[in-house]
Length: 329
Ligand SMILES: [Zn+2]
Image (tube, rainbow, N blue to C red):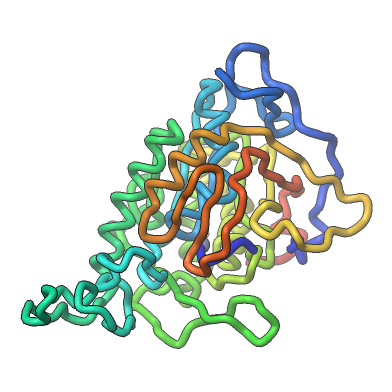
């Protein structure tokens, strides 16, 4: 994620609902006044679907940690490894695709400038680094189950596949648009139906009580965030149908993230749902995403070097199962 970041364009799918449901006292440790998602209790199974490593922590980390601490089954599905993202630490700058190796230490050279020059990055090295970072972040959140799109429960019958970061650049309106750099298996350029079928398989296997993902505009507009919303909505529709021996599963609650672009306009009468989660765990997880997040006390910055407060409160709106309404497929 490059910076914090609309309201679902599929407003026809919005379901009006009440505020967060209070969890049983004493089950959420030191968190004060914990609240959870309405209708999704501490014994639930939740599936969070995100585009890149760090997104899960930045906009849903406190919620994931709160549910994990409460004893819920929390599963993260990440679509790509963020191969085309920016890298903050200079010593890891050589991992960034297309980066100008301006500094000797970024080029793998010693102070005298006589060391070897690093080869151009192809995203593989950054993918491996972000796999490690995400595993550490999930440990900090207390989340023990993770899936990559195309692998494990979300793998095609023909064998595992990898979906890659689509990249982005800033449009003239301040929102993200597609990048000119394209990797093979780019998430937003691969067929939506195939991606949705993989997530549907995972949903049938996990039978979650709730699925959480981005709103239709992808928050700040990253093509992978938009595609992640689309494939998740399509998957919810597919998953409701039987597939071979796997019975269909109609997910009871679907939530769109609002805290990924808190300044977005919401239509009057659409209630935001606030979850007061585990801020300390979220902050700890942020520190693990060192290639793209810098933490100092209760504040953090992304590659834009704008410092923001770390919040334990995350906001959502509840969606009605929308695919058949919105015609994603
Ligand atoms: Zn992202």
